[in-house]
Length: 245
Image (cartoon, rainbow, N blue to C red; front, side, top):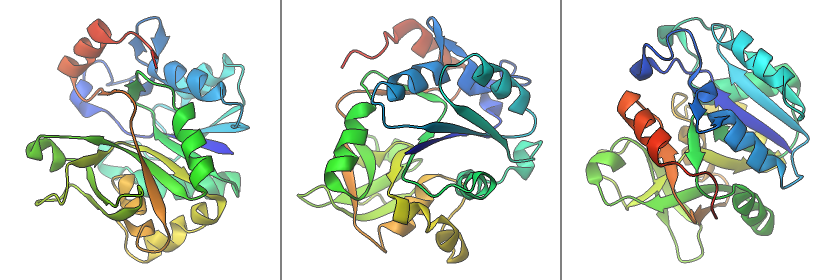
């Protein structure tokens, strides 16, 4: 299994911290955001390669970070140099698949979130289901639901529909950017793009995929800390205590 880490954004809301430095390599406590994610995922023993998808501006920083890690980590430079020319998450995923000739099941994650629970639970859940999967959490605020992926789920965790940034959310189940693709479904990313799925938000591919094949959703057993601006970064630095579940 491969782990694709989405890290090609420019994090403009975190300037000046990220004006010349990538958000996923900011420190939270004693480790970088990426260290928290990769070190946890690696404990499952399921991943044989981590692929960090970067823009051209920040690629050297990720390459230097990867050189210090024990895991097999490949940095893919998508060639973009500004927020205005970025490819978008789904096109970045397909770019990495083509660049690395990937043909495997994939854990696809955003590189700028930290969790207080182990992602190995999600990986085990996906193995049990045998389908592509996402995670979900209950979000009471409709204003926040307007800015994320929202899933409609049946009693067996099957996704009935998923919509990115809906004006009228169909449920309160928000889907954070952590996904599992089966090998067969990873092969369909190009088809999804060709058939018009959105490409900016990573959940747009899953929104298309769940209209084609069964996709399941695991309720998150803990909390996700999204680092979107300077205020949220300061809050995470003050409150995050690592993986406790």
